[in-house]
Length: 557
Image (cartoon, rainbow, N blue to C red; front, side):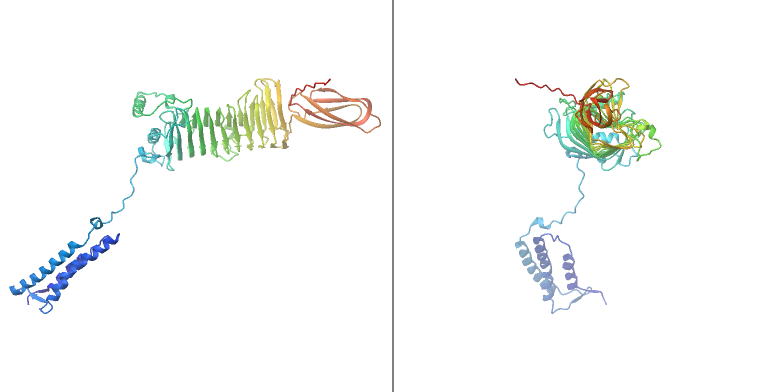
């Protein structure tokens, strides 16, 4: 028997398969159009099926149907197909509804030139620290420096609008200092990663050098050519600042700087309103943070140490370098720990304040100094609420120096060092000292170069000590006896030798009568009080060596 097939089933399967196409169901119009298309394709099959309901459903391929029968079916189908096409044309169709929803694509990287956040990894920096990333980091700095400004800060300082140079949490190896291409910009943030000096990093350099690049001239012809190219590429940007400051409002935060025993951490030269927040600076041989000229550099919540240790280090005797050097005015160091260095903080500028500082950098017994004030003649520095841990404070010729609410542990003390023999406007008050009962005074005088000759307005009072010797500029004592002379020696307490400016005393007699008494002598920090007759009694005296007042009394007539 010849093979047969069912024409109705074949025809009906075509629209069904067509209906299986997935249309976009994002809009109501798309749903309506899908229903109309299904109806359009399904209706001819239904009409053909009903017209052939009385005829056989199968056809033998070897025996074709009569011509009249086929032609009649064709006319019937064509007539209904024409009606359906007319119906389809009358339907409102939105072409945009036929489009299939686009496949979401991942966001592409925005070119650094149009951004305000410069990710150093986008410039090819290696966050693993295995490859030198100096050039990549310098390109990021250059792009940030050349970005469009937002007006001006100080005259000559372009406001870069808060541009961020993001280190993306990486650890980057660099072989030379990171500098901006020029001066005259402000409002930049560098944050979020680690920098480590390579083995060939300059031994006198800093990982971050906030100074004009022109201050460091290229040494090789290749470097000179490269410098010329950089200048040409920055023609629209001022390379030199017309301001009296190099930079303003530059922020470094959340950084770990490893100098690899090759130079220092951060150098800031002649800048205004610079901030260093939450930074960890280690393995420096020169200075962790160096501030020169300029003013208003704020160093906060940071940790510095030449060697990573937590105290009682066996190599402490060999610690060197300086944690922070302030050679400028109006700076602030707040909540900072210096845990290893020969000198924790060196101050050589006026009007600075140190608060919340913890120094255990190198014990005084090993030759270390916590805070060294190298400003003979005009100190103008305040040290408050700090912790001097086995290391002390040295002040040269202190003039206007205030130290208060500070804890000194482990025989740590304050040394006043004479350079020109001047101490004026010194307050050391309300501090606590704790020692080892070896007789170490809380305040010492270093007069090896010259004696202090000009002493005025010095107040060293209200300090308490445990296991150390109290020293003060004011003292009181009592002497009892039976005779005509009472001697009170204030040398164990008074700081300056042979200096008593003011004496107040009271005389109490246990006998009868009213003896006459007077201060007979004040010398070598001793007070001698005598009476005209022998009497049993006691003398209570208070002395002061720090104040000098001139009072003139005018008698009325």
